[in-house]
Length: 338
Image (tube, rainbow, N blue to C red; front, side):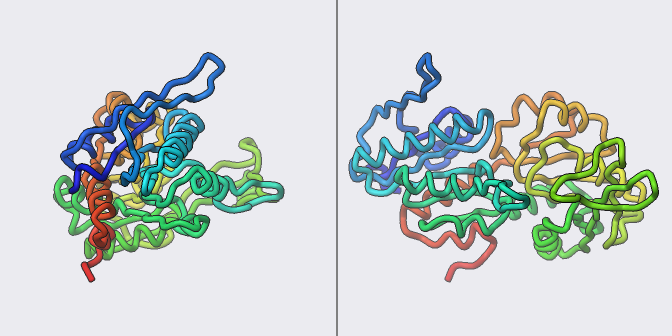
């Protein structure tokens, strides 16, 4: 890589990942100061020239998401006004990705707003990982590379799950079926699907009315395995994110009830709340593997040895290297070089 024409910058959201990416690229992070004034305004100061440089700003949507987003926007705009040749936002976890559609009256499409802000701030290109909905790429008028964690998950399964050839890959909902089937096909194993519904006291099952679920006292969530035979086999749950852990809890219980000998969960983005950390330690779950698109060092200590971390620094570093050198990144999607 031509060291004299590329710069890697990061804010305060995930300095550990940024350092790992820089180390893999054999370069240093650009010294910069990102802090808050007493009135909570964000201030940035970049300590090196970025004139005519190919700038990559690594900032994940985690921790205080709004601060992380504002830091990224201000850093991008600072580079734009400093005459950077190209500005690429590297966002391992895209903020507000779940607000990607108008699912009820007067609901905002905040993911589209974030896309607009990134473009206005000066970003020419976006690199992200496992978007909650791939259609978010269409919100942008600039190139977007949505990298997959699937190759990392396959490597993890083959390395740490001895009986993976006789496992069944499950999606906890219909929305993740495409992700689960792709992983199952790559592994050459069977696929399963779990359906989530709300069971009410009168015995009926229902979803939501007018975009709102029924009150907790009127019923409770329930999951059923509707596709796939898991009896006597290991179940591999695949999803793009875990937050409260309730979907994970219901899925584990449903799979164990169907005779699964073990349950492993592989999640792209571990946005795990404090309550979920305590819940995970008590679940009938063998392992929960998440990527480090979100800092996980504190979470690992609280999950009773069940939480493991899959490193994405190689994939991000290779995407940066190939983007800078004008090479194809299709190999990072599990494809072949043209």
